[in-house]
Image 1: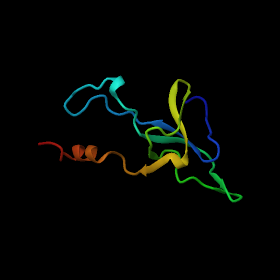
Image 2 (image 1 turned 90 degrees about the vertical axis):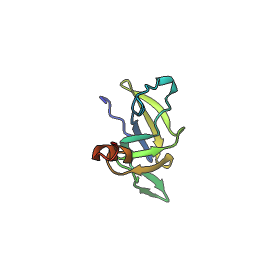
Image 3 (image 1 turned 120 degrees about the horizontal axis):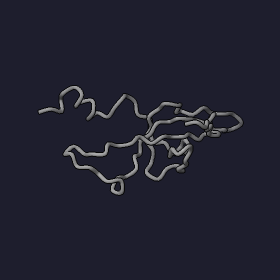
Length: 113
């Protein structure tokens, strides 16, 4: 991202995490049939929410992997990249760990028969 976007107050900028193009059986899913992922990475965060004369810092920070609602936020396009900007209240949770549980099992060899 060549331009630097700094969201104001309690807003965050999120880059959606792209899902795999194929399913387990090897079937390729066309773009028209795919739903947009509800998972992303925070790439910029505002200073915090202003409440009762004080600034309350955000619970999320840059680099956090988060879950958000299907219709949350506003889509924006910066330097050809599609991003989401939303209030912190629209974020449902922060994911910890490096991958999904199924991916971890396959890497460990538990998914093989």
